[in-house]
Amino acid sequence: MTDPEQKPTSPRRRPGGRSARIRAAVMEATMQMLKDRGIEGLNVAEIAARVGIPESTIYRRWKSREGLVVETVLARMNDTIPLPDTGSFRSDLHALLQQSASFLESPDGLLLTRSMFSTMNRTDSEARQLYWQTRFSHLGTLVQRAIERNEVRPDTDPGAFITAMTGALYVRMLVLEAPLDAAFLDQLEQMFLQGVLKQDKKIDA
Amino acid sequence: MTDPEQKPTSPRRRPGGRSARIRAAVMEATMQMLKDRGIEGLNVAEIAARVGIPESTIYRRWKSREGLVVETVLARMNDTIPLPDTGSFRSDLHALLQQSASFLESPDGLLLTRSMFSTMNRTDSEARQLYWQTRFSHLGTLVQRAIERNEVRPDTDPGAFITAMTGALYVRMLVLEAPLDAAFLDQLEQMFLQGVLKQDKKIDA
Image (cartoon, rainbow over all chains, first blue to last red; front, side, top):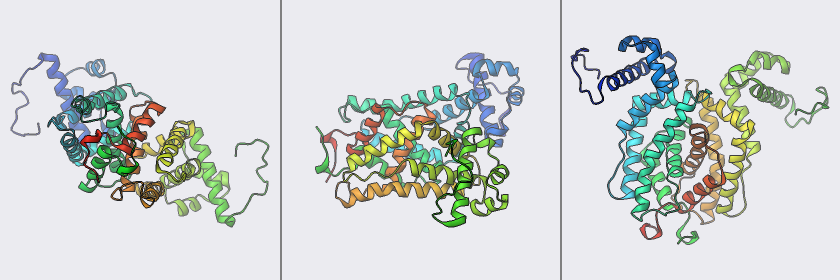
């Protein structure tokens, strides 16, 4: 993507034709500008110019500057944090926590996450909400599968689980500004899998 | 505080003398201005004028505008969400979740939490970090007590527990913009106490 040898005019794979190509080019330009300048410096007119399309095309497709940022960030997350499917919930959760932590602590991940949170105060939040819901429900299939395999209690809400897991990582990283180190991830794994009560204090079937 | 009958010149209790009185007056004015205008409209010079002190006194005491906001918000949280101490971890956690949810969903709580998160992108984060650490370690004593009472596994890190609990509430409310309803709080309670694994899948002492 940042290979200086790559000619901008070189032919590309065309998985979805012209409109998919434009979408990819816009998101690539957005990603690059986010990295260079942060969310405050993101300029939709300039992105349109770089890609060689009218600005109105971007607003038609993404509705708003925020919609564009959200989709770009989440697409990158989906690419970088694939859904583990090892056949065991314990190792799926372990892999997901490891991958999420590595991504969130990478320069890209930190930048993207801060960008997402800095839009928190805006009223124009539909795009953000929609994409987080999509992302969380995607991650939730990991819990759903474990319920179907009879590993996880059937009354577990996958959405609540993913919310708590993601919340723990974000608050640790962004609010406390503490590292997502192995000791912390082990604590989460243990807590979510076994709970914190001692065995003889549990009411369980 | 907002009682129109109250004369501004009426004598007040003086728990810590003049400096404590000034501190309280500044935080009250800050709280009021945050409610009226949000964090963007907060003006330190105006707060100083309302209280009748030089602006420099505020900067000496709170270092920065952000420091002032953070201390004001967290002091309000500590007043509004007292630490439960029922003698049982299960009911302590239940009470803490209920109180936290009620506060976070109140107009004050929502405003204050959004204000805190909207400062996320600033580099001047020492004050914020310090106060969150203080807040979390205060809440963590609830877990610590349960470990001492032999209810909770001794290898549980109170900080990780509070981080996950708080993270779940914030992400649900601020990122997903979904309600902190009884069903969600029940899920958290169950998850954190018992874990999500089915009994026969647990490795536990």
